[in-house]
Figure (cartoon, protein in one colour):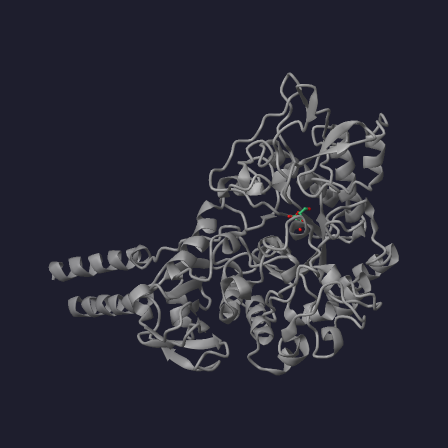
Length: 630
Ligand code: GLC
């Protein structure tokens, strides 16, 4: 009898230890909230669906062929329909448009081509009513050469004399040369001679974009005031432009700038890739500068209350540097340094292992307690469909909507808009215009900036001008909002379903994450949360039909799962039950599946997989033993 009691005792011990036995290994623990604590306070931006509007191309309300603020206000309900939380607008400020608004002549004034300050205020009201937050583009690295500050700096006005990076140049054999070999992102020397001041000024982008001098505290204060100005207009934060470029090395004690070393893979001396930008990019001071902007936002919040105002930082930098923008143990930084890995690390030929590696790279580098984000595209990058495959649009939207954290969608990606070929004659992007007809296509960003496709009417419903600022895509009769609203499984409707699901599901908002390539073709993302449903997103990246046994990779899944989101490639329907041991995915198919019973929801939460089943048996065994021994 003693023997049986001992067995029963050991069994109870085993039962108590089941939580550890059953623990799967999440490769991302969403520790910004207590796991299992439903209702913990998630901040609005931590699970937000962000949407980037490129104002010139969104909606033209006055028929001049260029989009404007009233057009945005008019179409804001569309963003609501998509399930968008916040929208960031590319620059809307007074500008000669040498870089389409990224060359700002007045940082606190609205460009007439976009409207007036009253139009902006109207837009803010509409946004407030719809509960959509407005994020503005903050362009700190440079102004326009038509900015008052630059004019006064060039004229050596004492207040502005050192607002920009000026240098008399290097004298060699009586000839004047630029101060260093630095190259502009948009080709050629980054130094421009200024006749009036008789000095060179630095411009890391086009020559109409002189770099501000951040070693001058007055510049820092002036730019912080720009933030304060727009905060007081009610915006919810800023996307910070071209962050890694803001500081360059200080001149040495001879007042000389050092040359940058060469990259041997690039033989075009005019091209930005020709040099390693060790003195003009990613200088350590930049991180602290971003922290100081966060302090401006936080101070405003302390004074005025309300929901968090946020910073999103544009940093195409090595991952260890990008992560520092989040902040450190003592200082807060940008809530969301943009995660561009899905852009920079994946191509049309990437397999599921590459997808897995790319997603995990961000999650595993991210400091504890921070929030992930996923950017699929923007106005500087080829469209998602053109970059990663037209037939992968839905699966990529599915991936970003079911990964933890925030996601950022560039206008038109929800429709599957693709790059539009633009002739050299029609090309307007300075990055391409600075090249020549034989290479411009490599540099042009015009193809991803064409007008938004609303309907199949004239100008795709974007405008009623006889000519729009960039041509309309030829496919606008098949790819547009009006048509896609009617097709149940259009890209648009899949996108909407994904964000509806995301909003309803605590698991998708705050659950744990496991990302796994099940083969070269299939990527799986599992999301789970105690006492809630488990979700599984499956992408078949390749063209073959794939049959998978999910239990091989996720042994704690139940034998059947319910289909919750499908695409037009899928052969199953929403509501169908599929077998975990033999699940078929069509070519380039993707699905979101959900566990159905609370038992499995609980059992797969990663903490007590065996507990319910084993626990009951052991309890019965104990009662049996007790009764036989009485
Ligand atoms: C950023 C913008 C880009 C612009 C550049 C210069 O990278 O996204 O469009 O040309 O900065 O402001």
